[in-house]
Image (cartoon, rainbow, N blue to C red):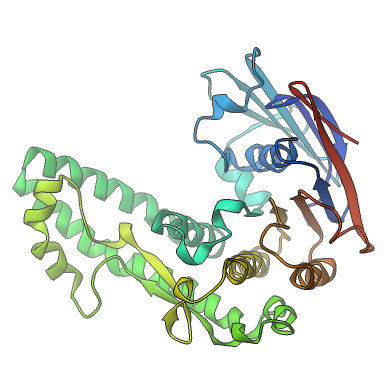
Length: 362
């Protein structure tokens, strides 16, 4: 079980200093736009993954006029993870009060999180890179050893791109052969993940809960896209695109372009669904991914949900809460309003306010 009992922040964005105790069950952090709600979710995600979902430049996480941030996560068993990040330096991660230095790969493996955040809410129309990231995360926990093939693929693509820029056709041929060898492995792994997602879509508790108000979910499915045209051998696609790739100086088709479509009655879902319906699908897919990770690791991932109330009506909010109360050890979520959540038992409320350039939690 992974359960956070407290987070401590120092000079993390708008927080000069924060000590926030957290509970098992649902923790709702609410407040107006710009108050600092999302920063709390971001700090947990950053401390446990090394990434921010709001910026690619981690120096931006450090409070203005300071040169260092700290984020400390305390778990129910007394274990701690502390991240210290200085401007323009790599973050230093220590565990258990500085006794052991860590790297993010091992940290992510032991303390899984599932993040549902605003730019992914409309997953049906999100870009292929976001969808690849979703597949890669599932692979990391379900097929950890095999997921290393993704790193091999990145190396092959990088080497081939370099050869394309230099028009080194002998080396291009070599890297083509490597790409053709790894493609069926990558495709098989990702097809397995998509098959698991489809199986869960037809039998998962979370889908059952939402079906009460959303019977259209019965016709939802995932279709894997391997990164090159259907009914075409990958080797043929690679050969056909060589001239174009040479002009573009990059590999235009292949498993590095893999993605998936979300289908409703075998039609692409974002062409027919409302924004609220798309958000429901995104929430369901992330909760299903969480179930898959839990089944394969025996760890219950911490669920982080940012800006949860936008686009979701009261009935669907209540259905989601019903599922989370029964099936999540810990959920930490943010919302502009508390009205949908305040009447629910087992929901712990934290109000964020912003004064001057500093955020506070009450």
